[in-house]
Amino acid sequence: MGWWRWGGLLVPLAVIPPFLSDYPLYLLSWALVFLIASIGLNLTLGYAGQVSLAHAAFFGIGAYTTAILTNQGWSFWLALPLGGLLACAFGFVLGFPALRVQDHYLAMVTLGFNIVVFVLLRNWSGLTGGVNGINPPRPTLGPLDLSGDLAFYYVILVVAFAAILLADWVVRSKWGRAFRAMRENELAAAVHGVNLRNYKVLAFALGALYAGIGGGLFGALLGYIDPEAFHLTRTLEFLIVVVVGGLGRFAGPFLGTLVVTLLPEVLRPFGNLYLVVYAGLVLVMMLFLRKGLVVLLDGLVSIAYRLGKACGQILHHGASGD
Image 1 (cartoon, rainbow, N blue to C red):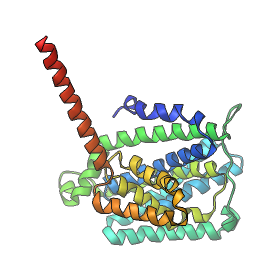
Image 2: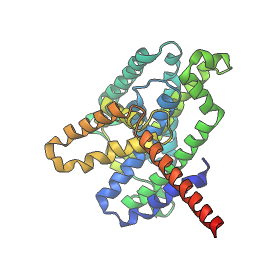
Image 3: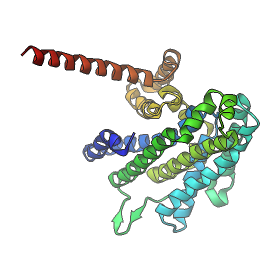
Image 4: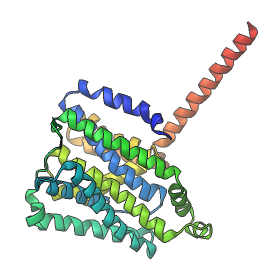
Protein backbone atom coordinates (compact mmCIF):
# COMPACT_ATOMS: atom_id res chain seq x y z
CA MET A 1 0.00 0.00 0.00
CA GLY A 2 1.65 3.22 -1.13
CA TRP A 3 1.83 6.37 0.96
CA TRP A 4 -1.08 7.93 -0.92
CA ARG A 5 -3.40 5.13 0.17
CA TRP A 6 -2.95 6.17 3.79
CA GLY A 7 -4.21 9.68 3.02
CA GLY A 8 -7.73 8.64 4.03
CA LEU A 9 -6.42 7.92 7.52
CA LEU A 10 -4.03 10.84 7.72
CA VAL A 11 -6.42 13.61 6.66
CA PRO A 12 -9.01 13.28 9.48
CA LEU A 13 -6.25 12.73 12.05
CA ALA A 14 -4.67 15.99 10.89
CA VAL A 15 -7.85 18.05 10.53
CA ILE A 16 -9.95 17.10 13.58
CA PRO A 17 -7.51 17.63 16.54
CA PRO A 18 -7.62 21.50 16.57
CA PHE A 19 -11.31 21.21 17.43
CA LEU A 20 -10.77 18.80 20.35
CA SER A 21 -10.49 19.73 24.01
CA ASP A 22 -7.40 18.80 26.03
CA TYR A 23 -8.39 15.32 27.22
CA PRO A 24 -9.65 13.90 23.89
CA LEU A 25 -6.50 15.29 22.27
CA TYR A 26 -4.39 13.51 24.88
CA LEU A 27 -6.27 10.25 24.28
CA LEU A 28 -5.70 10.53 20.55
CA SER A 29 -1.98 11.20 21.12
CA TRP A 30 -1.77 8.24 23.48
CA ALA A 31 -3.55 6.02 20.95
CA LEU A 32 -1.00 6.91 18.25
CA VAL A 33 1.91 6.18 20.61
CA PHE A 34 0.35 2.83 21.49
CA LEU A 35 -0.22 2.12 17.80
CA ILE A 36 3.47 2.66 16.96
CA ALA A 37 4.63 0.23 19.64
CA SER A 38 1.92 -2.32 18.81
CA ILE A 39 2.84 -2.37 15.12
CA GLY A 40 6.28 -3.54 16.26
CA LEU A 41 4.85 -6.42 18.29
CA ASN A 42 2.65 -7.39 15.36
CA LEU A 43 5.76 -7.69 13.19
CA THR A 44 7.49 -9.89 15.78
CA LEU A 45 4.58 -12.02 16.92
CA GLY A 46 1.89 -11.66 14.28
CA TYR A 47 3.99 -11.88 11.12
CA ALA A 48 7.12 -13.73 12.23
CA GLY A 49 5.46 -15.91 14.88
CA GLN A 50 8.09 -15.16 17.56
CA VAL A 51 6.58 -15.05 21.05
CA SER A 52 7.73 -12.00 23.00
CA LEU A 53 6.79 -10.85 26.49
CA ALA A 54 9.51 -8.20 26.52
CA HIS A 55 7.75 -5.42 24.63
CA ALA A 56 7.27 -3.25 27.71
CA ALA A 57 11.02 -3.52 28.36
CA PHE A 58 11.84 -2.21 24.87
CA PHE A 59 9.20 0.49 25.38
CA GLY A 60 10.92 1.49 28.63
CA ILE A 61 14.42 1.44 27.14
CA GLY A 62 13.32 3.87 24.45
CA ALA A 63 11.49 6.08 26.94
CA TYR A 64 14.36 6.31 29.44
CA THR A 65 17.06 6.72 26.81
CA THR A 66 15.20 9.61 25.20
CA ALA A 67 14.39 11.18 28.57
CA ILE A 68 17.92 10.91 29.98
CA LEU A 69 19.57 12.28 26.85
CA THR A 70 17.17 15.21 26.48
CA ASN A 71 17.59 16.09 30.15
CA GLN A 72 21.34 16.21 29.53
CA GLY A 73 20.89 18.75 26.75
CA TRP A 74 20.65 16.48 23.70
CA SER A 75 18.25 17.38 20.95
CA PHE A 76 15.01 15.41 21.08
CA TRP A 77 15.36 14.72 17.36
CA LEU A 78 18.61 12.89 18.05
CA ALA A 79 17.63 11.32 21.36
CA LEU A 80 14.42 9.75 20.01
CA PRO A 81 16.05 7.69 17.22
CA LEU A 82 18.92 6.77 19.56
CA GLY A 83 16.38 5.44 22.05
CA GLY A 84 14.80 3.40 19.29
CA LEU A 85 18.17 2.09 18.11
CA LEU A 86 19.22 1.11 21.65
CA ALA A 87 15.97 -0.82 22.06
CA CYS A 88 16.62 -2.34 18.62
CA ALA A 89 20.08 -3.46 19.77
CA PHE A 90 18.59 -5.20 22.82
CA GLY A 91 15.97 -6.79 20.57
CA PHE A 92 18.74 -8.01 18.28
CA VAL A 93 20.50 -9.69 21.22
CA LEU A 94 17.26 -11.13 22.60
CA GLY A 95 16.52 -12.63 19.20
CA PHE A 96 19.34 -15.14 19.56
CA PRO A 97 17.58 -17.27 22.23
CA ALA A 98 14.79 -17.68 19.67
CA LEU A 99 17.24 -19.78 17.67
CA ARG A 100 17.29 -22.43 20.40
CA VAL A 101 13.92 -22.24 22.17
CA GLN A 102 10.36 -21.79 20.96
CA ASP A 103 6.81 -21.25 22.15
CA HIS A 104 6.40 -21.13 25.95
CA TYR A 105 10.15 -21.50 26.53
CA LEU A 106 10.80 -18.40 24.45
CA ALA A 107 7.99 -16.64 26.30
CA MET A 108 9.75 -17.36 29.59
CA VAL A 109 13.07 -16.04 28.28
CA THR A 110 11.53 -12.78 27.10
CA LEU A 111 9.50 -12.49 30.31
CA GLY A 112 12.72 -12.79 32.28
CA PHE A 113 14.27 -9.99 30.22
CA ASN A 114 11.25 -7.78 30.91
CA ILE A 115 11.61 -8.38 34.65
CA VAL A 116 15.35 -7.64 34.60
CA VAL A 117 14.80 -4.33 32.79
CA PHE A 118 12.00 -3.37 35.18
CA VAL A 119 14.20 -4.07 38.23
CA LEU A 120 17.09 -2.07 36.75
CA LEU A 121 14.84 0.89 36.00
CA ARG A 122 13.52 0.83 39.57
CA ASN A 123 16.82 0.32 41.38
CA TRP A 124 19.39 2.18 39.25
CA SER A 125 18.28 5.48 40.76
CA GLY A 126 21.49 7.32 39.84
CA LEU A 127 20.62 6.97 36.16
CA THR A 128 16.85 6.48 36.00
CA GLY A 129 15.66 8.31 39.10
CA GLY A 130 14.38 5.04 40.53
CA VAL A 131 10.87 5.10 41.96
CA ASN A 132 10.89 8.91 41.82
CA GLY A 133 10.94 8.77 38.04
CA ILE A 134 12.23 11.34 35.60
CA ASN A 135 10.72 14.32 33.74
CA PRO A 136 11.51 14.32 30.01
CA PRO A 137 10.99 17.62 28.15
CA ARG A 138 9.09 18.07 24.91
CA PRO A 139 10.97 19.07 21.74
CA THR A 140 11.64 22.28 19.94
CA LEU A 141 12.39 22.71 16.26
CA GLY A 142 14.58 25.74 15.70
CA PRO A 143 12.52 28.74 16.81
CA LEU A 144 9.35 26.60 17.03
CA ASP A 145 8.19 25.50 20.47
CA LEU A 146 6.51 22.10 20.11
CA SER A 147 5.76 21.65 23.81
CA GLY A 148 2.08 22.51 23.42
CA ASP A 149 -0.36 19.59 23.38
CA LEU A 150 -1.57 20.23 19.83
CA ALA A 151 1.91 20.87 18.44
CA PHE A 152 3.29 17.71 20.03
CA TYR A 153 0.30 15.75 18.76
CA TYR A 154 1.39 16.59 15.21
CA VAL A 155 4.93 15.45 16.05
CA ILE A 156 3.49 12.09 17.14
CA LEU A 157 1.28 11.95 14.04
CA VAL A 158 4.22 12.48 11.68
CA VAL A 159 6.28 9.79 13.43
CA ALA A 160 3.30 7.40 13.42
CA PHE A 161 2.73 7.99 9.70
CA ALA A 162 6.41 7.23 8.97
CA ALA A 163 6.21 4.10 11.15
CA ILE A 164 3.12 2.89 9.28
CA LEU A 165 4.76 3.41 5.89
CA LEU A 166 7.89 1.54 6.99
CA ALA A 167 5.86 -1.37 8.35
CA ASP A 168 3.79 -1.47 5.15
CA TRP A 169 6.99 -1.71 3.13
CA VAL A 170 8.40 -4.42 5.40
CA VAL A 171 5.36 -6.71 5.16
CA ARG A 172 5.29 -6.37 1.36
CA SER A 173 9.03 -6.95 0.98
CA LYS A 174 10.96 -10.22 0.96
CA TRP A 175 11.35 -9.73 4.73
CA GLY A 176 7.61 -9.89 5.20
CA ARG A 177 7.31 -12.94 2.97
CA ALA A 178 10.08 -14.65 4.92
CA PHE A 179 8.40 -13.75 8.22
CA ARG A 180 5.11 -15.32 7.11
CA ALA A 181 6.82 -18.43 5.79
CA MET A 182 8.72 -18.83 9.07
CA ARG A 183 5.52 -18.37 11.07
CA GLU A 184 3.64 -21.03 9.12
CA ASN A 185 6.34 -23.71 8.98
CA GLU A 186 9.97 -23.15 9.91
CA LEU A 187 11.20 -26.36 8.31
CA ALA A 188 9.48 -25.62 5.01
CA ALA A 189 10.76 -22.03 5.12
CA ALA A 190 14.33 -23.23 5.67
CA VAL A 191 14.02 -25.68 2.77
CA HIS A 192 12.97 -22.81 0.51
CA GLY A 193 16.01 -20.77 1.43
CA VAL A 194 14.84 -18.65 4.37
CA ASN A 195 17.71 -18.02 6.78
CA LEU A 196 15.90 -18.67 10.06
CA ARG A 197 18.67 -17.21 12.22
CA ASN A 198 18.77 -13.90 10.40
CA TYR A 199 15.02 -13.44 10.15
CA LYS A 200 14.28 -14.38 13.75
CA VAL A 201 16.82 -11.85 14.98
CA LEU A 202 15.48 -9.29 12.50
CA ALA A 203 11.91 -9.82 13.75
CA PHE A 204 12.91 -9.08 17.33
CA ALA A 205 15.05 -6.10 16.34
CA LEU A 206 12.30 -4.48 14.25
CA GLY A 207 9.69 -5.00 16.95
CA ALA A 208 12.01 -3.50 19.57
CA LEU A 209 12.79 -0.52 17.33
CA TYR A 210 9.11 0.36 17.09
CA ALA A 211 8.65 -0.08 20.84
CA GLY A 212 11.65 2.14 21.56
CA ILE A 213 10.39 4.94 19.33
CA GLY A 214 6.94 4.66 20.90
CA GLY A 215 8.49 4.77 24.37
CA GLY A 216 10.43 7.95 23.60
CA LEU A 217 7.23 9.67 22.45
CA PHE A 218 5.36 8.29 25.46
CA GLY A 219 7.76 9.91 27.93
CA ALA A 220 7.58 13.30 26.25
CA LEU A 221 3.79 13.08 25.99
CA LEU A 222 3.31 12.46 29.70
CA GLY A 223 6.19 14.65 30.86
CA TYR A 224 6.93 12.07 33.56
CA ILE A 225 7.90 8.41 33.57
CA ASP A 226 8.62 5.91 36.32
CA PRO A 227 9.34 2.15 36.24
CA GLU A 228 5.71 1.18 36.93
CA ALA A 229 4.80 2.35 33.43
CA PHE A 230 6.92 -0.49 31.99
CA HIS A 231 5.77 -3.38 34.14
CA LEU A 232 4.58 -6.67 32.64
CA THR A 233 1.05 -5.24 32.60
CA ARG A 234 2.12 -2.95 29.76
CA THR A 235 3.32 -5.93 27.73
CA LEU A 236 -0.05 -7.61 28.29
CA GLU A 237 -1.77 -4.50 26.94
CA PHE A 238 0.34 -4.67 23.79
CA LEU A 239 -0.57 -8.35 23.47
CA ILE A 240 -4.26 -7.52 23.78
CA VAL A 241 -3.87 -4.98 20.97
CA VAL A 242 -2.37 -7.42 18.46
CA VAL A 243 -4.45 -10.47 19.46
CA VAL A 244 -7.84 -8.74 19.71
CA GLY A 245 -7.10 -6.66 16.61
CA GLY A 246 -5.89 -9.61 14.55
CA LEU A 247 -2.51 -11.34 14.62
CA GLY A 248 -0.53 -11.03 11.44
CA ARG A 249 -2.98 -8.58 9.85
CA PHE A 250 -1.82 -5.07 9.09
CA ALA A 251 -5.07 -3.49 10.29
CA GLY A 252 -4.95 -5.49 13.53
CA PRO A 253 -3.01 -2.97 15.68
CA PHE A 254 -5.25 -0.14 14.47
CA LEU A 255 -8.39 -1.89 15.70
CA GLY A 256 -6.76 -3.30 18.83
CA THR A 257 -5.47 0.13 19.82
CA LEU A 258 -9.03 1.44 19.82
CA VAL A 259 -10.01 -1.33 22.25
CA VAL A 260 -7.14 -0.73 24.68
CA THR A 261 -7.01 3.07 24.67
CA LEU A 262 -10.55 4.26 23.91
CA LEU A 263 -12.90 1.50 25.12
CA PRO A 264 -12.02 2.04 28.82
CA GLU A 265 -13.01 5.70 28.43
CA VAL A 266 -16.34 4.75 26.90
CA LEU A 267 -16.99 2.47 29.88
CA ARG A 268 -16.21 5.10 32.55
CA PRO A 269 -19.95 5.60 33.32
CA PHE A 270 -19.92 2.11 34.88
CA GLY A 271 -17.88 3.59 37.72
CA ASN A 272 -15.79 1.14 39.74
CA LEU A 273 -17.09 -1.75 37.64
CA TYR A 274 -15.73 -0.41 34.36
CA LEU A 275 -12.60 -2.57 34.51
CA VAL A 276 -14.73 -5.68 35.06
CA VAL A 277 -16.93 -4.77 32.09
CA TYR A 278 -13.85 -4.00 30.00
CA ALA A 279 -12.21 -7.34 30.83
CA GLY A 280 -15.47 -9.15 30.07
CA LEU A 281 -15.78 -7.49 26.66
CA VAL A 282 -12.17 -8.33 25.80
CA LEU A 283 -12.78 -11.94 26.86
CA VAL A 284 -15.88 -12.17 24.68
CA MET A 285 -14.00 -10.75 21.69
CA MET A 286 -11.18 -13.27 22.13
CA LEU A 287 -13.65 -16.17 22.46
CA PHE A 288 -15.89 -15.37 19.51
CA LEU A 289 -13.51 -13.48 17.22
CA ARG A 290 -10.46 -15.72 17.38
CA LYS A 291 -8.96 -14.11 14.30
CA GLY A 292 -9.50 -10.65 15.74
CA LEU A 293 -11.68 -7.66 15.05
CA VAL A 294 -10.17 -7.49 11.60
CA VAL A 295 -12.66 -10.24 10.65
CA LEU A 296 -15.48 -7.73 11.18
CA LEU A 297 -13.61 -5.22 9.05
CA ASP A 298 -13.22 -7.83 6.31
CA GLY A 299 -16.96 -8.44 6.46
CA LEU A 300 -17.77 -4.74 6.15
CA VAL A 301 -15.39 -4.37 3.22
CA SER A 302 -16.94 -7.40 1.52
CA ILE A 303 -20.47 -6.04 1.99
CA ALA A 304 -19.43 -2.62 0.68
CA TYR A 305 -17.80 -4.25 -2.34
CA ARG A 306 -20.90 -6.31 -3.14
CA LEU A 307 -23.19 -3.32 -2.74
CA GLY A 308 -20.94 -1.26 -4.99
CA LYS A 309 -20.85 -4.03 -7.55
CA ALA A 310 -24.65 -4.42 -7.44
CA CYS A 311 -25.18 -0.66 -7.82
CA GLY A 312 -22.78 -0.65 -10.75
CA GLN A 313 -24.70 -3.45 -12.45
CA ILE A 314 -28.01 -1.66 -11.89
CA LEU A 315 -26.66 1.56 -13.36
CA HIS A 316 -25.17 -0.35 -16.28
CA HIS A 317 -28.44 -2.15 -17.07
CA GLY A 318 -30.33 1.10 -16.68
CA ALA A 319 -28.04 2.83 -19.15
CA SER A 320 -28.33 -0.13 -21.55
CA GLY A 321 -32.12 -0.01 -21.34
CA ASP A 322 -32.12 3.68 -22.23
